[in-house]
Image (tube, rainbow, N blue to C red; front, side, top):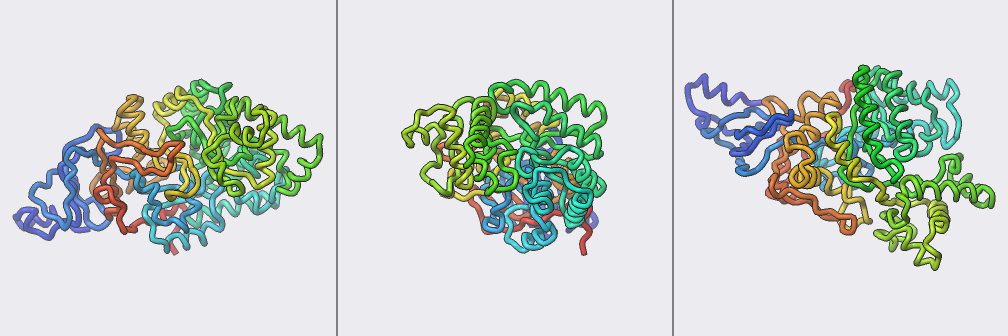
Length: 525
């Protein structure tokens, strides 16, 4: 780092008379990420660091960006990102164009293994943004117990704990669970507490897809809080929501539970995406017991008329009261490898195409058929706007996409893959005024950086890493829709990753300055 201002002072000369900065950002409204109002000031960057924040009218630079009329903020941190396609899409364009400079993968219990080998491969990639990872409970449980619906034996639990510990030493930021998914759904709370302690002792955090987000939501939140209490580990209730009409409004109670836990000294927070629809595999509608033992065991149960009837009854209930939202038009197909023409259409449409009366029992049969074909990705329109806004206003809620890296033309993804962060700035700040601009930026920057324990990112201050986003508060907006999701946002002309201009006047550049960030227990070899 060059100490240009100090050098100029010692020499008794002006800033313009010494070697220029690498990059100057001038005339911008600078939001430092802490939630403070903007100030009109300039920023100087040398290499990958911010070296000066203040009036720099006499300074020179190799490159100057005039940010007049624009907001300058720390780069956005996505705490819940599906980075599974990263080795195929290392540029992460769908994330970077939203202003994301750090994406955290391995959520919902699905972290990579072995963590060390995976991170070693990833750091050799031309990364468009910084990446970090959680280790996944489901991944680890599947390796030890496969799809068994039982508690681990003592020696199996010990092996799982050692795997969590190894992942933390290799650079994981904590443990993620997907207790709604398999095989995590087969675990009991004692198992999760034991693994969480292995992460906690190495400075990790716990992020959980709750066991239930519809009927059973309150019990799911209580379980997560108890895990935090018993394991002594900070918690994130990830993509916090209330699914299904029966649970609309339940966020009042879940947020009260969060407040009560924090008053007790339990460090619990949340993240959220700004949509009333979720995305996951259609198999989420199936009862977990039906899939114990894997695909062959599931197929065998479906071949038994009595077992199939039990499965169908459970799916019907899920359509009526949970992720189905009580209407098959709310279940929209997204990624269907075995029938691509279903993408963008609904379960109701599929019933009609098959010549079936579009009733929930017939829809349940088609869900079973889809599962037997290997499942498929679906968008579930089953949340209420009131809950979205209430959760967003809570001081412990951060913004995260739950989005998957995407490329235009591939499948029919959830629009959050392209639009999460600009949607908050457009819909919930500018249009609906649910939160202020400075608060939104805090929820996207300093707050998640603090949760991850990152002291050199998430804020604009001298000496910190130059991860920045420059956007127009008056025009920024998401363009991705459920009908046409492959659309990049507007109003974000510049994104700077580790000092490199990665989006330049709205154009995605060839800069690949992203890095792999490692967690608190990692020691460089």
